[in-house]
Length: 380
Ligand code: GMT
Image (tube, rainbow, N blue to C red; front, side, top):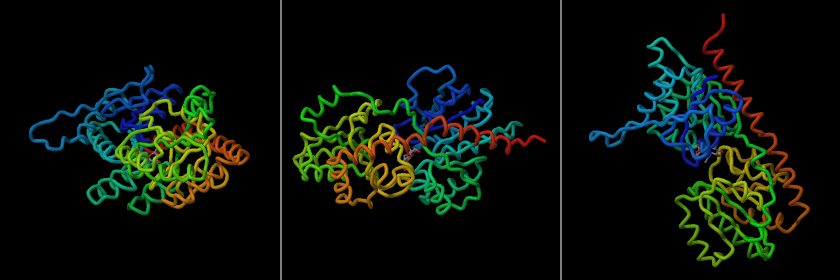
């Protein structure tokens, strides 16, 4: 198929999922056109089946707010018309689903139509989408898509609770490249970071408030208080980084904590991890947890959103109430001081990650594309 994929380019989960989907579909022989306002972080290498198109948005003295959604719709029209798209798949409802609806209407006036698939990822529903300033448009645009997917059962339910949507929503979870995300031998790295054989606790996020980075530091301080020799590696960057660094200084635990910044090869850090912490305040799926589990790392998470669909209590790790750092620290100490328990959880974590194998999940997208196309253009 000739597929257009629209996404945000930043380090957020929706951009990662969209880009990885583009790469797998291209390997399977589909022609992919990725449309974004800058090159997505994971679309770094040349791929003959993937063409990247940038939305150019010119400013004008009258525009205090340049109309990105319109420039995007106009570029979508170009792609549908000149690249002969069979289907347009937009990731994150706002404004992508709205621009896609507009592009489709324009094309219908020209006698051509193309099915639109919208994938709901997270804050497009749980935060921004239900904000009264956007709600009506988001609701309308999702409902007008020809096919809608959500990354977890939780997100599907949230969408029905918050919006008046008649469309069926198909749950297609996040997926993982099991070959890339697997525990590999990084003993040199481990020795350099942990010269005294300390345990390694890892957190990966964009350091927004929702990720609860200060709570990660609090849990880690409690782990140290219990006499566990450990290092905390924090991967990523964002608004809460300075606050977290200050917290480390205040707690006097800087020598045990390393802020590694944004990293592409997260799997290298996960390969030396003994435990992954994800205490998020909202998480529709938790791709970062899946990446850790795929590298055989037990996970301690909050029990909110879609996380219980990924991390299974007592099997792949533990889940605690939001902000219950005591509970998280208690389980962390237990895992880090009991090798048998650790080994069992890590084997289970990898096994569970295998259920989200990218080959299986991308096939789900392909069948959904087929289904949506057949509904849009029934064969008589
Ligand atoms: O909504 C966000 O905060 C960012 C969002 C995205 O679209 O980049 O991340 C979400 O999508 C990921 C991929 O589907 C999920 O794994 C994340 O759980 C989800 N983040 C949140 O819900 C906070």
